[in-house]
Image 1 (cartoon, rainbow, N blue to C red):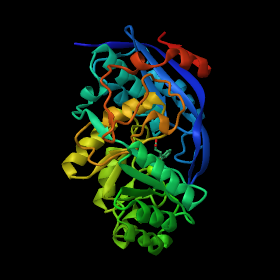
Image 2 (cartoon, rainbow, N blue to C red; image 1 turned 60 degrees about the vertical axis):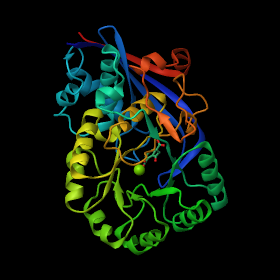
Image 3 (cartoon, rainbow, N blue to C red; image 1 turned 120 degrees about the vertical axis):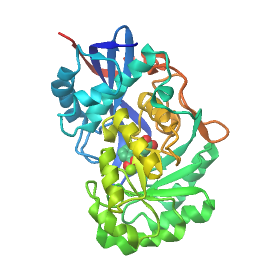
Amino acid sequence: MTSLRIERVDLLQLQLRLRHPFVTSFGPQHERHVVLVRVHADGVDGWGELVAGRNPVYSEETVATALTVIRDHLLVLTLGRRVDDPRQPASWWRKIRGNPMAKAAVEMAVWDAWSAATATPLAALLGGSRTAVPAGVSIGIQDSTSALLDRVEQFLERGYVRIKLKIAPGSDVTPVAAVRERFGDVALMADANSAYTLDDAEHLAQLDAFELTMIEQPLAHDDIIDHASLAPRVRTPLCLDESVRSADDARRALHIGACRIINCKPGRLGGLSESLALHDWAVDAGVPLWVGGMLETGVGRLHNIALASLPGFTLPGDTSASDRYWHTDIIEPAVTIAADGTVAVPTVAGVDAVLDHERLQSLVTHRASFTAS
Ligand code: OSB
Ligand code: MG
């Protein structure tokens, strides 16, 4: 039986420019401040990626708060301990409230170390069976409808099978109508990132004309009650992202009719263990699920794709290729789209084997190491 002692944790910070600015209802984003977590345990290295932003706009977590929580609270409960099941770290940290992205960054590194130590691909460890998952893409708000149509066309040409459009007041019905009109019955959805209120119910109902598979998180980031009031006023299914932070949150949201679909992001849920709990609940409850993204580098991207191989992820997610955001990824080979519009589920056991270590070293701006005393 495998057992790993967590001997050292390294935090590596890097700053990466996006190929194109990514514009959402939060505003434009030009770069990502990435923190990679390396867990060194019994001779193997496992990697995790912090998905918190520089600014607390998607959730209250930031790179700075997550670094503090990891250093001062998670690592003291982690270093020197033995893992004989990668579900354990999440339980060690249960008394630490919130801070799911900080937890996920470390927890996913432990899963990845487990994958390397047992020579088992992460997808297999998690119970995934698919060998490829559909490629979906999230498209930011563009300056004009013609720019948006060009962008959608490029992604469809590259093979993406589902298009998600970011919307916000002033950029919603018109661009969605234009994309539907131009590209026929392409699988289409919209993500509002909390930009509306219940007063906008009639306006949002105008989107019903375009047969979207869902509207993601139209209302407040921490709300389910108003979403439950909105749901019967629109025909389009609602999906929750920001306001579901645990499998229990999902159960409560479904119970009151706040959503019909859930976006599963391991960073928002505190890691892969909670993602599995959400997955298993969703399968039981018959709730469609998909894997979201947070503009990950190859590290988090491979983890997300492995997760998406589970049977309960019944809808295409924001599982895009490396070149969606990066000129050069920090993994080699990068994630690419196959001719059939899918991305391959990684068969490698541990991200370390595909990390471009040289390139990574050249990008790191700050590093810190913590060892078991
Ligand atoms: O709401 O799903 C979101 C990116 C950053 C923060 C929040 C979200 C997103 C995306 C992009 O939509 C998903 C991706 O392509 O990684
Ligand atoms: Mg979202």
